[in-house]
Image 1 (cartoon, rainbow, N blue to C red):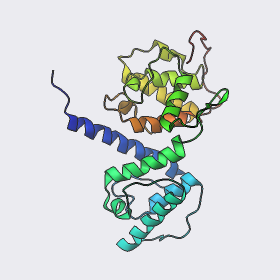
Image 2: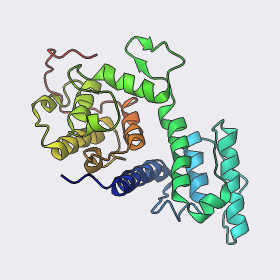
Image 3: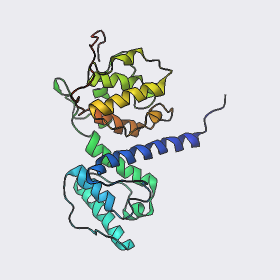
Length: 257
């Protein structure tokens, strides 16, 4: 059996991350009727980045070039955006305006991850009894612990990669967040990974308002990107069940962690 090409695997998770982060940005930008098609080119004048920051922070950035025709004005806009990020107490590492202007994807993805971490993941994770009680826990540990508290103990849950590949964990999470919304996940065949993920993620989108920033085919990909999974799953924390949801009678036989 031939071993997997590490270069191909590396390219695959990067593509998953690029697609996920782009969808995450667009979920926020749609509130101001804006859209990113290509992360490598669409941020080069700073305008979409400024729009995104204003939506995420709910703050106004008033002084910037609204119609930047020249390189200098575009770089100035990006610098204004980066300064705003630092003023929000977000630590930036090894990125400057010229990197975004040139469309250096690796650095742009790193920048977006800092925004996702700040505005989607680094927030209090509360269980039913209130505070989790550990101020030193990392956002990753907090999110994983919150998910573990919502799903049955029989479901393996120690990471944000392979434990999600058969599509069962996301089904368990949907039913854990909204008991009775998807009790049938327990009858799903782990071999039908893509179908499992599609069904669960569609229910989450329609009835819990969890956008599919991560594609179901990416969730079941062996090269699933950890940061992309965290980005998607973070929306479950504040998910609310919509009126009219098709709730089924709950089986209380399963104990959650």
